[in-house]
Length: 267
Image (cartoon, rainbow, N blue to C red; front, top):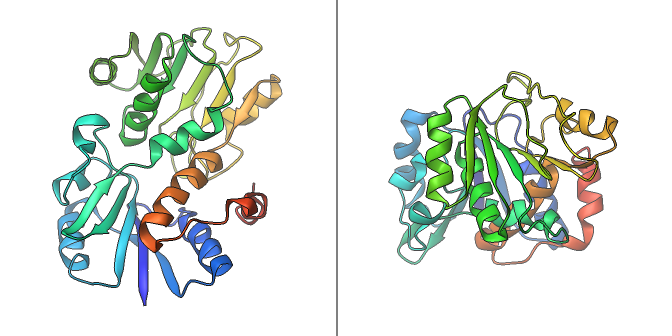
C-alpha cells in the first residue's frame, strides 16, 4: 500500500496522521500516513531504507530534522540556499527531494492582514523560525526583533534573510510589535513554558503561536485575556499539510471541510 509519514524525535504529539488520514478517507484514497520516530543519528539510515520503496511517497519532517534532512536528499529547488530548512520530502523521478511548505502554511492566515512595514517579534531560531523569517521577508514587514537563547544565532538569521532589526536573549522585554510569533518549541507539551509579558503589545497586535500541542498554549491564553487577536498552530499545520498531501498523493485535499478537521483535532 502506498504510504507517507511524518518523522521527528519526539513524534508522539504529531497531529499529521490525523490530518492526512482525514483527507485520505474523505477522498477515498487507498493509502496510509504514519508517524515514525527517527533519532538524529538514524536519519541517514531512514532515508536510505525508504528511498528504494516505490510505495513510500515521502515524509513530513519535524523537530529536530528540518536542517539535517537536507544532507540526505536532493534539493532541486534550492531550499538550503533560500530557507535553510525543509519540512517535506517527496518522491521525484530521480529519488526523494526536499521542499518546504511551512512558509506558505505560516503566511496563509495572515494573507488578509496589511503588515508591510509593521514591526514583528519572533521567538526561536530553528527550522520553523527560518520558514517564518523567509515569509516575513517576502511580506515586507518592518524591523524584526528575534528572541533566542543564543542572540548571535538570531542575528545571523536576520542577516541571512535581509531583515532589519535586532536579536535579543530570551526573557528580554518585548517591543511594541504588531505581530508576535512563537516559532520555538517553548510551550509545547513536555517543553518549558514560554513566559512573556504581553503588556508592551498594542491593542491591534496579533499573537501567532506555531505550537499546537496543546492548542490553547499559555501564550495564546494570555493574548486572548488581553483581547488581542490570536492565531493557533493548527492554521499553519493544516496549511503546510495540504501542500504536502498533494505532493504525496497527487490530489488536492478537501479544504472545504477544514472546520470539521479542526474539530477532530481539538480546535
